[in-house]
Image 1 (spheres, rainbow, N blue to C red):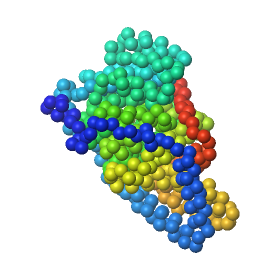
Image 2: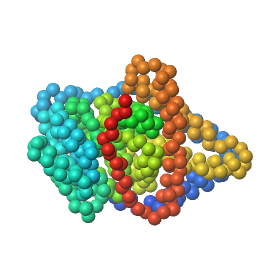
Image 3: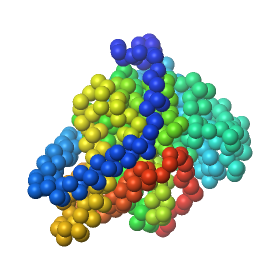
Image 4: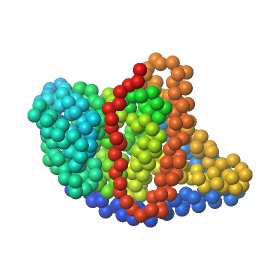
Length: 446
């Protein structure tokens, strides 16, 4: 089959790019409105006689969504296999690296030894002040498919700016993105590329997993959390909802990426922002449970707190930025419903726990929103159980149940993270601060 027929565009494809950047204005004002509605609505529910009925109605709606996610049949994505290497398009792999001397050599060597006939690797050295640049220059002599761009210190845009530089210089029809601490299997591209034969697929996200490391509560929590997240993304995709990109291990069709304006340089989480842009532009994102891409986890609560605050704020920004197209554009009621339920459970419900708790103390009654919180924790527990069963096969169900219950306790950190983040975004002046996770290539304790 001719390559131009294999990688055809959808019939509705319009090459004219959309101007998504014009929606990222007035975040602080929007955040004030949202927080006022959440706090005011929660307090009002405590004072009206029918407040508990509203809560139980919302609990029923969220409970139905949770059951749909838990009961949906697990089925891996399928695509016709590419039997001839001549059918495979050029793939460009991008890595934005800043002060990654501890892990960059391991990543480059693994990426330059993938089992795939036609690909290039671009590493954008984002003004590193350590030995990252020197290591990359030395590796260029070993691998002809490796290209290195050294950015100047004054170059802006953070990771998104670096990736946009790589997009401009690269030539591949499919763009893969990895973090500097990624660990990949040699056959990864042969799993990914066939999925793009489906014209409506704009991107593919590979399941992320935490690499083995020190025996640590926070690291074990992240390892199971990745399984939970992967299961939910997989199920949302199966139900026609919004599967999300996760940065490390994401692959995007070049034409889709160019049409939505590339990576947003005015956001804290380029992957979550790009997720919304692609879906609003009527592309689908496929999720691949197997194989996985390994990355390092953080090993202290302080590092976890800072990392999750950045993730939470970046994820919240996209709802503030794109609420108008989310509400008005014809991108499908199923995706709108799915992302709306995610917004309520991930952001609005945690933000409402503060006024709910204060009113509970004031009125000396139990918190009004406990049924909603209970549904979310049960969804986390059930999804973790099913995800671990899918990953580990015949492992004892009681052991999986124990891990799932521990996961419920671990995930409670999300409540204060989101609640404080939403207040901070509403009261402080707009600012962008990229805080990178420090990678150290830790060793496993015996």
